[in-house]
Amino acid sequence: MKNLNSVHLNGLRALEAVGRLGSLQAAAEELGVSVGAVSQQVIKAEAQLDQAIFERTPKGMVATEAGGRLLPSLTEGFKALSQAVATTQRRDDSVLTISVAPVFAARWLVYRLDRFAERHPEIRLRMDATTRLVNPALCDVDVGIRVGSGQWPDVKAELLLQQEVFPVCSPAMAARLRQPADIVSLPAVIDGRAMFTWDVWMREAGLSGATLETRHVFNDASLCLDATIAGQGVMLAWQTLASFALQQGQLVAPFGIRAKTGFGHYFVTAEGAREPKKVKDFKVWIREEMTSTLKLFP
Image 1: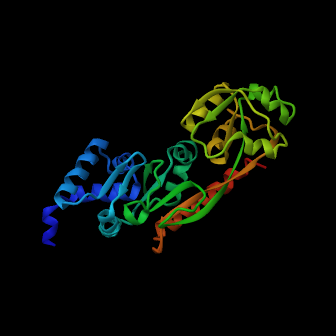
Image 2: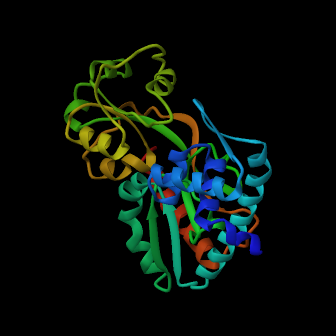
Image 3: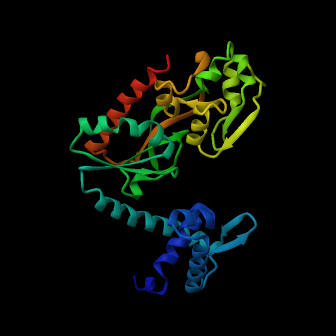
């Protein structure tokens, strides 16, 4: 392994991340450094290897012939290192590390954590709130919950809930609605990062082609919900996002029409790994809580 002395490990990490993710920006986000730092590491590593590993093109970083030989091996090597570290970090069975999207954590999960603690006082919960899909085999995360198609590489995805969307608005706005077509008279609060559009619900309601006037666009669903609670418009929400506000009477879901988006909430765990008891206990509890949530949507 003496040949590793000629190339800095950080440089190899930068090469691997850029090759796997396809851009300096994505690599910088994963490594937690600036784009400039990743670029410098790549340049230094290429100089130390005396090989151009990437070709800089208008479409991004493209592996050269030498890069095509090197990068897959780097990925396998760093995967093995990451698994070794994760195995060491997982020794404490009293700590359960979960990865969830911030909006799921803030709008659904945090209201229920006391009940989990009461049932499993032997388990201390550690939460990583992030929108980034993590591979539990490569880090200290035990289980993740993500929304999507469930078709993610290198992880095991287990369906928790089929996502359904429906309009929500303040009670005052809901008082103006008599039939589904009346919804177009309301201003819309739009989640700019949503994986669906109003067309999904409009088709289900028999209103294909109908549109709403956009009042606000946010890049965060939680902000959309706050604006809707404040009476600034109507938004297209889903079960876990709106359940607490509906239960508290802050919002109303008029008409009772829900539309499937084709996406779902999924448990994400390490592919091929045996699940420890703490993960199984958490999954059972989440399913029970989800069943309770769905009772709000007859």
